[in-house]
Length: 129
Image (cartoon, rainbow, N blue to C red; front, side, top):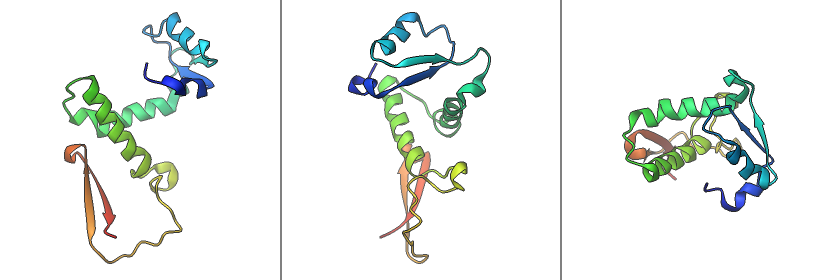
């Protein structure tokens, strides 16, 4: 587990009932004061945020790449999470990305620059300063 000192900041862990999560897994979190909450059987909608994240990251990222190992997967997911949480438009935000600030006026003229992410799998575009 790579949570390190952050594990104490979690109040709850919501997880499904997969058999790979043993009692020892739950005890690690309980020992740090985190309450483990199991979702009801056969109800993936109870954990809809995690299900949506997994579906999105698979459809937009990992299904289009050949992952070479654990470190490579960690690197890819970290870079994709930065894109997802910073630049990617979200439906719940009226197709605005989380890093969008309505107080900043962007000029309509000027050169558009492209930033390649994940080796060109994803491209982010912004106006040149």
